[in-house]
Length: 269
Image (cartoon, rainbow, N blue to C red; front, side, top):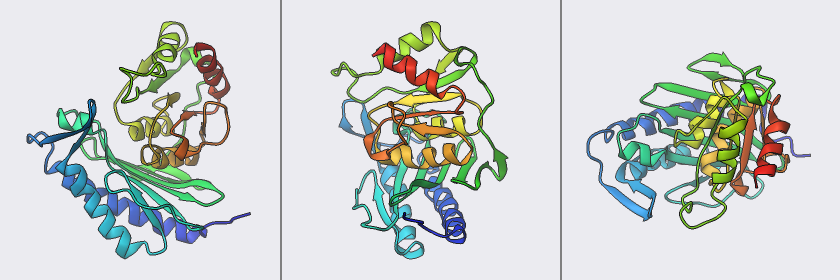
């Protein structure tokens, strides 16, 4: 079995990633609510120069400070490490929010170790000034304070979150049925923030009791999934198998309502 990085190495990597996330987010704040020019990768898939500026910071610092770790980032791509850890980086998770002046967006960094899965996550939401981070098996924090998933044991008493794919206008697999089923009769409420990384972190810190979404990218999932696991939660695919960030699908909960949420999602489909 692959033992991955040592505990000491993981702690060191997390410290570096926290610093990188703050520096990358500083680039984003230079453009927030300042009329950043928007480009369209698709009808509802946006990118700005600040996505790229943030990613440039991430790439430069990973290259010089995290030797031996492969980097795959949203705008510039990259190759997964062959037998070595891969860092998945989203320089601006929630670009649509950012472009419209909405405060919920983040820099998301997640380390995947071969044969293990997500082990380290760092997500920074600069307008909120919330820095979530975690190491699986060692716990998670928000702004240095220990966090944990909620204790809610009944899905009907829970607050959930979700999101919708870019191709929701043309694809039948658009999460509408699942959303309606849960909003109508299952949970106390469902929220939709527009940043998968923030949604996952809000599960980790006990704000949400669960979250589900499909058609995400690895850089959307890796950081937040690691933080959920570090905070004592569950993060799987829709089939209940351990989360694979490359699949694009995740169900993340406090663990107590996990089976119930998966069952409702399956029934809605």
